[in-house]
Length: 439
Image 1: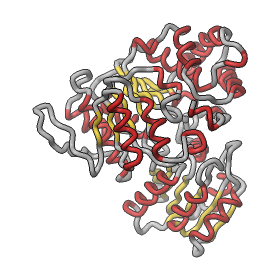
Image 2: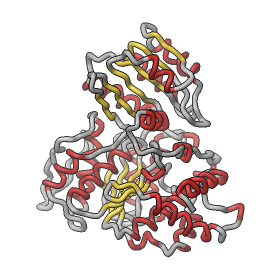
Image 3: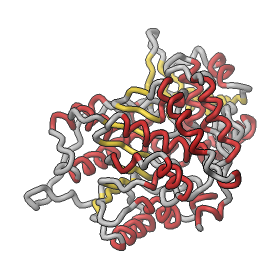
Image 4: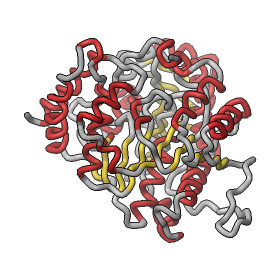
């Protein structure tokens, strides 16, 4: 089997759609020898900031000399981004090996219960991390938490970044319902750290933590600082960050609290914390690219209203006089109208584009939503990202946003990410029925 053939096999798993539930993943992991039992995890859920918080945790523990696995989704360009050890993408030959080892296991499932793409990739990641003898795995949920495939592990700590509206059609139409799905990663007696501050959501997390007898640490502007080892409360300042945006300070505080909680199990020095946060790299999230001619391109995968608001605040604070050209693409199952309303007022010109996805919102619809939000800006609906970039070639400052899929396309076009060989389509998935998540 070649790497291209392995990727094609992964593509074939899309036929089985997506579904919530742990039965298949537990069975598949058992057939693979339960590799999760050989590993230690920090399990991360939440609406926004999961990936950034995971990247911070990975960078801190790697700076401390630990051998760290990182599991995230979606990938921007290459499938191999999803599974990393010490920030090295899983090698192509390892993907081939893992796929080859999974194929006979999949034959032990009836056709109407065949594992999905994400279930298979979850177990592939567990096998790889166990083979690599990782000291710790930073383990990001895919969607939700309670019935997400990643929830077959019992972590050292559970992290819930925040709760906002996204994926309501599957996770619920209130913050309380969404929080209940995210809080499903809380395990008996396992500490949980959260930056959630919406009262309705926080109440649910508190109730689940109490029921599970899980120590709860709240992080954020209104939260009490965690107690130090001598029992006194103290404020731990967030060291310098390599990532732009005030929201990243909350993510960093969350990572710091998790590291502090696990100091007795996985010790980390203050120097490693400072070094890890200063060096953290997380492409596609307020990623600033500066060209030799002074031109700036900011890439950010703000794909929901909370993410768009964080992007707007970062632009207003860090680039107050820039006046950006906005290139915007979004998925139609997102709240794209409100995303347009949040971001359009910042732009001098707006180019809307389709996202390379079956679920894309139409560029014309995006343009129609942006126009009233910023009548002073010229708005153009383009047939592609390439066309939008060509038409904005004279702009000193461009923001490409609205979807991680679009950001991935921009990175691939500019040669700023490992070549994916057409692997971005692996991010596509068929949505489960809304009722399935509430079973």
